[in-house]
Image (cartoon, rainbow, N blue to C red):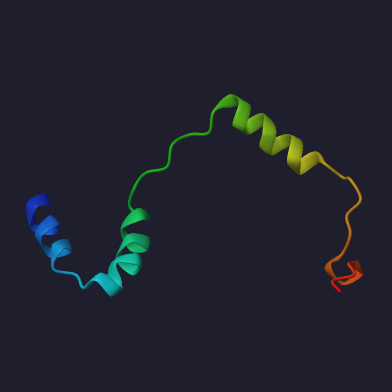
Length: 61
């Protein structure tokens, strides 16, 4: 199957199903490696042991 055939098939998809098809197709797009500053931010967030407030402790009124 060629890319042109796939493009043609995508054009035939009803508008209401576009979001579903997008979610399926995006899974086939390769992810890029994180940049060094992104890795550093992830590690910093994982190491963060700041106290948190539970959802039930918040006064939502």
